Length: 459
Image (cartoon, rainbow, N blue to C red; front, side, top):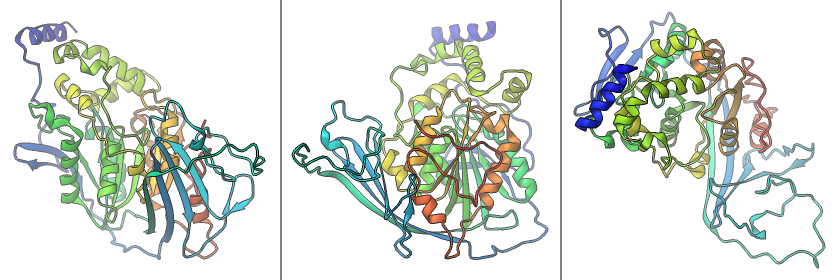
């Protein structure tokens, strides 16, 4: 503690921050670790394990095809309307929550910043639809004499997504499957230690990079090296280097944004995505009133307090086990300069609700119930926006749930990797997916996720 204060005081006097460009010290290069130069002078440490498979088995069975069509309308008053139009090839009638059937299902939500003075035309007068106030409209319309005159709203943007995806089981014996693990701010690839060991022993090929300035990767001197776009290009380079035919992305916290970016940019190569405590589908924007806006030397002096706060908020329990996990897994062990640059560089205006609604890959949302960084309502909102998403909550976990509850997380991820929708004509899979309403995020029977609790209803 005293050493930290002295270093911070010298940092303020000299104007030079301590530990700016030196990454975390690491031991000799072990088996499974590589150093990849994504750009001249920009080197990332990557753990890459290709297990020796006893038998190579090609994907068996046809898998399942999901053909969905949805219409997304963005209005000038900041309202987002998502209409799930159902299956064009086989127009099943969807089952509503009240037991009745309807031809399609409409979900209406507001953007991150709704208008301060909503007008009457911000609601949709449609039986069974959900309005911006969160209440369902009744089927009986008021008398024409009492009904106020409504102006026809002009959409600001409208797009139609007509997608048909073949979703197959990704077994450990399939050589065309690769798993990518992406950590968040302050972490390293070591936070995935339990998952990397578990899935590599099963026979999966695993790839996990250290972000720039984290773990044993190089730490550039300039803050521009840690913007979202700079880090996203690093992850793109890693993905293009190691990608197979079917790739599964697993992201945690800030790493979820990079998974979303890759799923949007490479929809044919990204087969499934797992988002762990990633938050809502809103555009990234640094906070103007944040402790991370303080000078680097001040943050360096406060680093013990920040580490204690991270332990308090990132884990459901704060015992010797959790402290040792932080130490062993290099979590929240980055320089003050890198931490400040990472937090101020989280600017990604393209990643809004519409951007997320356009993603067509199956997505598993995992949330630790005691997470103090990401409220459960944000992941519930993500489940509402995404086309094909399953939300599962681990009651015993917090923000670092993959370190706290590795067995539950590993089991849940493995079940999702092996999951595929039913392909027979009697399947109700598509109906269950497209009938998903804002009040709850349903999980199809084919993917039980027994390691976690049932998804609670949104408020």
